[in-house]
Image 1 (cartoon, helix red, strand yellow):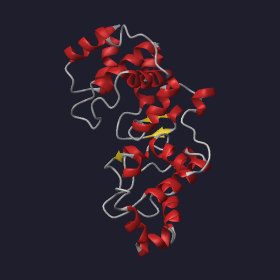
Image 2 (image 1 turned 30 degrees about the vertical axis):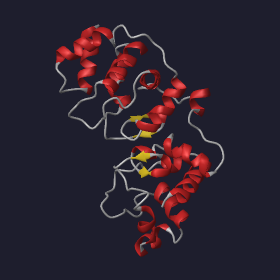
Image 3 (image 1 turned 120 degrees about the vertical axis):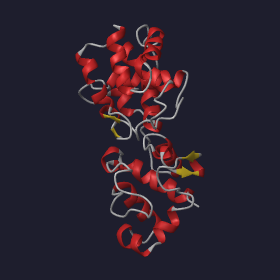
Image 4 (image 1 turned 90 degrees about the vertical axis):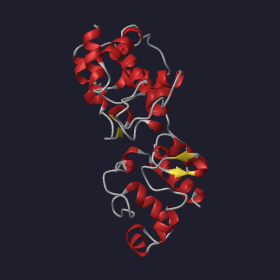
Length: 246
């Protein structure tokens, strides 16, 4: 049992010594108790994990980290239990590959448990989320307040962008406090993304590579927000960002 779990974990952490893997598994993956709030876990996953990881049920298509559907496909075929997979994910959150890009302790305690429980439930499983899971992270209305929920939640924007109004400090994408308005005011941007700030933001969300700001390249920002987010969520996001950008 330990050997097959260790095989999977080493696929995530190729630079972690096998002894450390075995030690972690002895108390984590093999004997891990199932638990955690999967609805909360989905919301947390979308907020901080979805930008880097593909997970079909969560609607995320990140490519910086492992595709979780692919990573656990063999384990599903090998009849790993949800408890084993949850333990693997929990271990990876606590002890990420130090040579990789995942920050340590992205979540801890109950939040890490919730994320691990959600991933264990849906990774490499067919179909779509239903019921409460399908509604997790959904936002009603189009207000700026609703848009902030999208920005810090299902939209995963806070993972990549700095925006003081959202208390986010991401550096992968443009700093929205200092770069958004100047970039949207450029003639080349106006020609493609529209003359108003709201039109510019809408285009940047729904068709991000129609115009790429200086210093950035294609393939960084997800290009599926127009289908991944609901129309009201996109409108709310535009309203929030346009009102918050300095």
